[in-house]
Amino acid sequence: MVTMVEIDDVVIRGCRTHLRGCCGESLDSYKGENYQIIIGDCIELLRHYVKEGRKFDYVISDITDIPIEEKSGPNKDKKSQVFFSDVNHSIWGFFRDVYELCLKVTNDSGYIMTHVGASSNKDLTESFKKEIAKLDKNLATKYIHKHVPSFEERWTFCHIRKTGAVDKI
Image 1 (cartoon, rainbow, N blue to C red):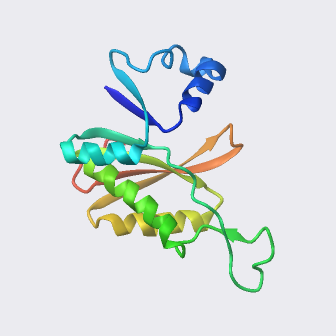
Image 2: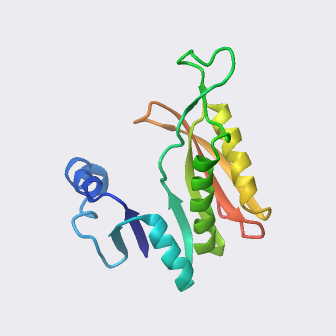
């Protein structure tokens, strides 16, 4: 059973119309024999699932991209000097909150998979690794770099699992 949560129904309708080649008929109905699509806020739903004690084998997070901050220092005015930083704790705090909820609804042998961002942005990957390490000392991570044709570049993806889970990757 697959449960998909999308905050904006316009995304589903747009995919149904314009991405038919990859979606097929799966988005024609919000509920099928082995799937359901819920339009709503994933954070609220994750909190609800935590209270229910509901668990999943896999959680795939396509959370919003991490905002870019301008670099401080002598080159701060150069538009090309941007990086992803853990300086802005409210932004990273939001990401940690989401992944903490994901961990709570993931089975002990389950996985969380998420995108990190462009592989060329080393600062982003390092900041992401630091933030994931703050979640739980009993986590194993695996970073995978794949070319994403629609972005025309390599992206970094991260598989997160609780230590002791059988590695299925």
